[in-house]
Structures are given as structure tokens and as C-alpha cells.
Image (cartoon, rainbow, N blue to C red; front, side, top):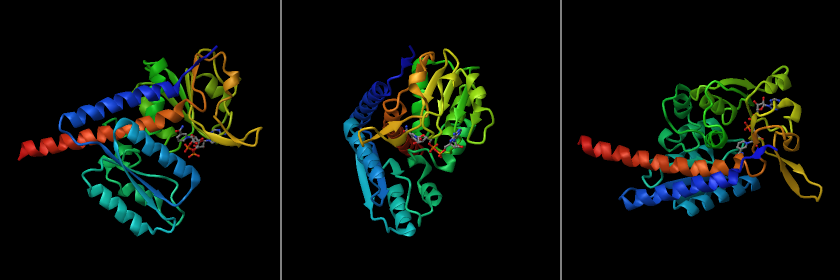
Length: 295
Ligand code: NAD
């Protein structure tokens, strides 16, 4: 039987650590970390994500600032909100929930978030820092994937890892983090030829394609570790939607360890967002201390 990696339990322990960090920061005279969440429009899935993020903040003692804007908000008005949050010293992290309505240039808005407050890690400055291994804020889902991997396989040096999916927010940053850990990384995508044979050679598979149960049992070599990032909503038997991952979980008995969907990568994403917000607050506090020392 493969070990089922419990993302909920790991996320709870990350949250515990984050809450302790917040308490220590505040007790030491530092700022209370603050996260601003910007939502444009009323997309029901986005509303759920935003509510979860706000609830997460409450749980660990992070102050949250909600900016719920109507769907017809202009790009300029949204950019003005971002500028205001960039300048607000109580806000250490800014998250703009995507997708944005089609009349808004998403890239332009995400690039307007100050890199030091970009707790999603999507800003080109943070992407550059990640790809050069020079710090910066690491995107939440990839960071969560690395923590899940660490919980079963702390030494990745020299291992063959296949990443399925090459998106800017999941596949590519995961590949960069794995390279930093000296793994041998193969990044694959929809046009990759012979994917099952490539996957079969891997010590670790990270599936982030958004293709339900793409990775079958015979794609996975015995003893491999499989991290399933994919989440697709499909109609269930009882008329209610159910969430399906990119991996045929029931066929993976011969794997060493595998993450479930739900309950694997998903819970780690918010935990990492909260942890990134505290890191940003600490960096801001540190910078102020340095600035004061220089005067
Ligand atoms: P995306 O659509 O931007 O990218 C998907 C990538 O997978 C592309 O590079 C594409 O070429 C590749 N791909 C698609 N079908 C494939 C196939 N059949 N074979 C090989 N490669 C294939 O998606 P994304 O934003 O990177 O998200 C990927 C999945 O991860 C989605 O299911 C998404 O819901 C999920 N996700 C989960 C979390 C989380 O918190 N758990 C966070 C972000 C994304």
C-alpha cells in the first residue's frame, strides 16, 4: 500500500508555526502581519477561495483587508486600489484573486503589486529571483508541493523528477524549486511525446495538468512518489460535483507515497500563502530596522 501523504495535517502544522511566528513578531514590538485580498466581480468559486483565505488569516492572527470590487471596475480603478495597498504600511501582502474580468489586463495588474508584497510570487521580480535561486517570494502551490515532498523524501539530490504541466504559476516554478534541490527535472506538457514512458522512469512525479486521472498506475514505477496538484470538478453520481486529481489514485498501490485529492496539495496552498505573508511582514520590519540603523 502506498503511503497517503496527509496535506491537511501538514497544513495544520504549518499554520501552527505561522500563528506562533505572528505571536512572536507582535510580542516583540513588530507589526501584525496584514494581507489584503482583492476580488473583482462575483465569480462563486473565487468568492469561496477569498472566504477561505480570510478565514485562514483569522486562524493564525494575520490582519485581513478585503477589497470586494464590482465586476465593472475599470482597470485604472483597480490599479489605483493596488497602488493604495502598496503604500499602506499595515498591508504586507496583496493578493489579487484571478481570473480577473476580461476587460482587465491581468498581467498588468499583477505586475503592479509591489514585489515585496507579492505573496503569490507571480511578479516578474520574484519569478526572476526564483529562477536564479536568489530568494524572493515563492508561489504558494509550488512551495506547498515542496513541503509535501520533503515530508516523505527530504533529499532530492540526483533524483529523476517528471513535472507534468508547464504553467507559469505551477509547473515552471515547481521545476525551478526542484532544480535548486539538485534533482534532474524533466518538464512535460500537452505536446510531449511518449509521456507514459517518460513518467515511468521517474523517482518522483508531480502532476499539474488539470487532466482528470491522466497518470495511470502503469505510468508510475514501483516505489515512486507522486504529488497530485490537479483539481478538476466533475459531476458526481449523486448530482453533486466531486473533485478529481490528475492521478488515478486507486491504481497507485505500488507507489511509495501519493497525495490524495482533495486533502493533499490543496490545503497546503493557503497555509503557504499565510506563511508568505508573515515572511513579507518580517522582511518589511527588518528593512525598517536597517533603514533606522543607517540614519
Ligand atoms: P494550466 O491549464 O495553466 O496548465 C496546464 C499544463 O498542463 C499545461 O502546460 C498543459 O500543456 C499541460 N497539460 C494539460 N493537459 C495535459 C495532458 N493531457 N498531458 C500532458 N500535459 C498536459 O493549469 P495550472 O494553472 O498550471 O493548473 C494545473 C492544475 O493544477 C489544475 O487542475 C488546477 O486546478 C490545479 N491547481 C491546483 C492548485 C491547488 O491549490 N491544489 C493550485 C493551482 C492549480
